[in-house]
Length: 177
Image (cartoon, rainbow, N blue to C red):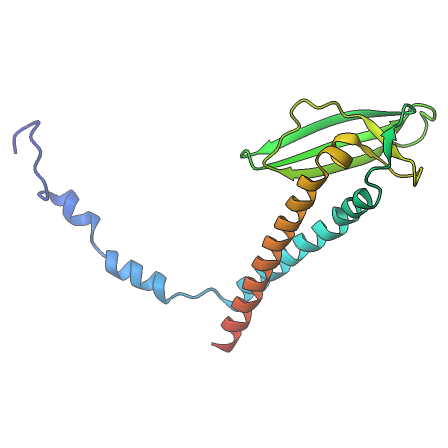
C-alpha cells in the first residue's frame, strides 16, 4: 500500500466494521418492551397530565372568567419576575406578587406558560379584578397572552393525553401477547 493513496474496501478495518450487523439488528427487532415499562410510562404521563390540569388549569379558567375586568393594582408590586425560553418553543414565566400596603403578608406566586412567544421585555404590571377583588394576576398573562396560554394548554394537555393513550394501549398489548 502506498502512503497517501486511498484503497476502498481493502483492509482489516473495513471487514470488521460490518461483522455481526445482521445479528444485532435481528435481536433489536425481536425485543418488545415489557408490560412493566409500558405501565411506568402510563403512570408517569398520567402524573404529568394530572399536574398540568390541577396546577395550571384553574388559573387559566379564572383568567377567562375575569377577562376584561382587570385593572392596575397600585398597592401590589411584582418581584422576582423571570421568563425562561426553551428551544424557541416553550416559555415559562414566574413571578411573585407582594402587597406594598401589607409588607408582612406572604407574596403570591404566579406562573404561566406560552408557546412560540417570549416575554419580549414586557413590564410585569400587577392587576386586580374589579369583579373579584381577591383575584390578582399579571396584565401580560391575564389579558395580552391569554389566548396563547389557552391554546398552549390545550395543545400540551392533548399531546399528553395522546401519549397516555399510546402507553395504555401498549401496556394492554404487551399483557395480551
